[in-house]
Length: 88
Picture 1: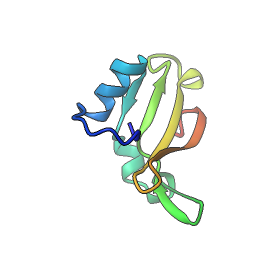
Picture 2: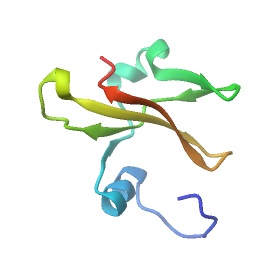
Picture 3: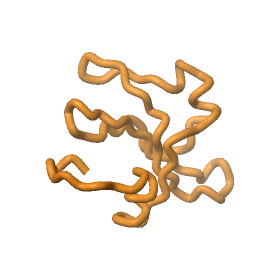
Picture 4: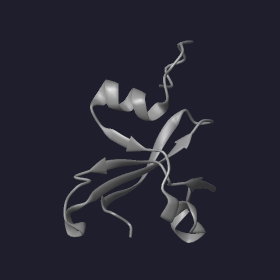
């Protein structure tokens, strides 16, 4: 993703699914409406944790996992914020 090569990518969620067989969502209505849930501070900056990998999405609530991350374009990285059960 951030290897410096000029190329055209599909939507990020499609690329991650095709390259890594992971289901990613780049939006979440509940998180986007709640600023306390949506933003986190790391390395002196505020980041948006809305993007997430869905783990066992169609399971009982006590078993629905999420990996929330922020896209950090300046640092050319993904910042993982939460690995665990769904936040709500």
